Image (cartoon, helix red, strand yellow):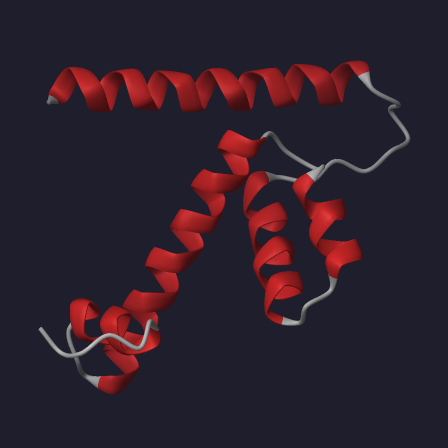
Length: 102
């Protein structure tokens, strides 16, 4: 199990390194975006049904990095809502997805 986690983390960091190297080699005047900024823009564009912004944000980082960022954003959002509602994260996640209580 620990080996799987290690391999997954290694793949993620290799993807981030590749993004950083690509950014360094790209036009220096062009603003670079980090994976959390890309994830926030991607999710908000998805919620607003803004296909142009969604595609733009998806191009800022690798698909693996974007997936990690979206996952991190989802975790943080569920935790924040759970604290705000004084409920468990599991209850909040199920409610957000329209699933019956476990």
